Amino acid sequence: MKNLFLISFFLLLIVGCQKKQQEAQPVTIDKTKLLQLVNTIRQAGCVCGTTNMPAVPVIVWHDLLETAAINHSKDMNQNNYFSHTSQDGRNPGQRITAVGYTWNTYAENIAKGYANEDAVIQGWKDSEGHCKNIMNATVTEMGVGRSGEYWTQVFGKR
Image (cartoon, rainbow, N blue to C red):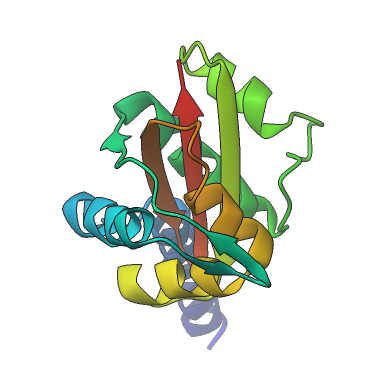
């Protein structure tokens, strides 16, 4: 009976550790779709809260911004927090610099609980501040990362 208990305990421990490792891994996202959704909004213009935002130029994907976004989403997921400031005190600009992106301008959107690309972009569009980041005419590049339920969208201009 004691052996059965120990075997069950270790199996639960192993399964729990495997689940934790899986949750910490970035979730595959559709980069093309995310970029298309953002650029469709940017090309059409939109209303962010009560502010009418005119059309702005399209942006392109940048892998270093994606890396910064993945890192922040993983950190929030692993440490169970939701903030633009990392628990070590770093802001988005510091995290972007840390991956090697030399920025002139940056912006960041975060989200939690959205199931897919369409839903998270709509959520950001429906939030005035996040929407204004999407419509920021100064930024020229974007990257997005997801880990578990956490999404991070990073914009930049070099």
